[in-house]
Amino acid sequence: MQGLHLTADCYDCRCAPGLLLDPAQLRQFVVEQTIRSSLTIVGEKFHPFQAADGSAAGVTCALLLAESHLAIHTWPERQAVTLDVYVCNFTEDNSAKASGLLDALIASFAPARWQTNRLQRGSGANDQTLALEQLTQHTAYGTQLAPPLVQVQSQFQRIEIANSAEFGKVMRLDGAFMTSERDEFFYHECLVHPTALSHPQPRRALIVGGGDGGSSEELLKHPSIEHITLCEIDPLVIRLAREHLRQIHRGALNDPRVQHVAEDGFAFVKQAARAANASQLYDLILLDLTDPQNANGSALAADCYGEEFLQACRALLNTGGALVMHLGSPFHHPQRFGQLRQRLGNIFTHVSPYTVYVPLYGALWGMAVASDTLDPRRLDSHAISARLEERALGVLQYYNENVHQALFALPNFVQNLGA
Image (cartoon, rainbow, N blue to C red; front, side, top):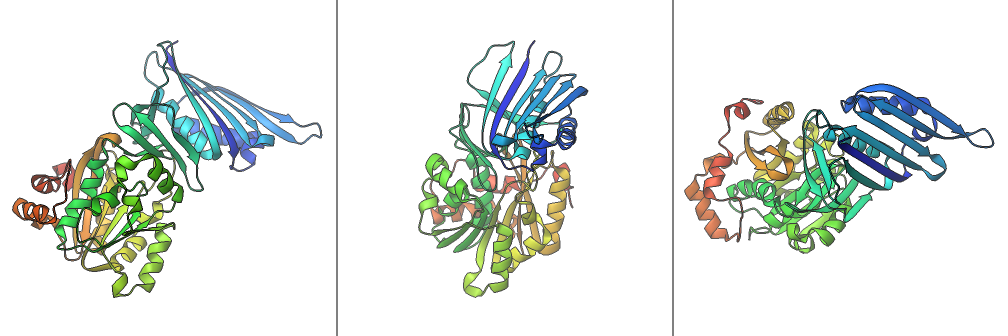
């Protein structure tokens, strides 16, 4: 009987009405998601209900799985859905498959609010939930989270903030880990400082994404920074980060040098590139984005990885300016890493890929600096040490003059991606 039992109660669902009313449409969707999660269907039943006047009134369905079962009940009159996924873990651990399936179902029913429960059957229980993110269809990484402090559906995405024993407060967007209090410096210091320290005196910066404030906080350590445009599409992310993630942004989201723009990054950059004059250009552009598409199907930032967008970013850079972005995991996402590296190389004269292990992501992560003039690999440890001393950046937990050179020392399998 050892296994994992997951339930979700979803309210004010904004999905297509057919998912709540039409058994054929619901069946097609549910079967597709179940197969995608690599669970095995061995039987099924979809039963539609009718109201007193003969109109459709909801659907109850059950899939019998070799691993156990999936049950769904729709309540169209309340725009509500209840979900029930149970998998046996006796011969192998199917937890990641079940969690991925539940996340995909919740995302597709698009509830304004929802409540989830997780029960470890046959091996005791506690109030902790093993939150898993699918790195690929076959691999997941996770950590135990306490009951959520925040669990809300914004206009754009699902936002969750919860406490973790190892990571402190953790933020997830659409089921994907974004940042945590205790490991954010791995990502934010390495996103910001290799580029910012390679620039002789960065004054103006644009951050696309970055609503948690971590990259803004690192940039503001550089005394020459006069202005940061923080283009975050979802203002609710910034509001919740202000309230719950102060250990990440450390007040940067309230700094007068940071201008918030609640706009789609693609639209903002394209419009700014068309209208830009010399006073509106940037020394640094940081693409602190969600993945182009995560394993749960969310693709909110996909346009910001395309060549058209990157060309517009180049047009917004001052002479000597640079762009930095993450490329995904070179091991788990080699195709994405290689394609983005090549795309940057088609646009910029110099592309400098590098890697850092990010604990919350459970993987080696790739980043790249792109510029027509600036190449961070040219600065040796003595030059970086001198700039660190000159700028007095304060406490850094990861980055130093020796780490700078080490970041750009790529293993052969990474060096060959997109080369």
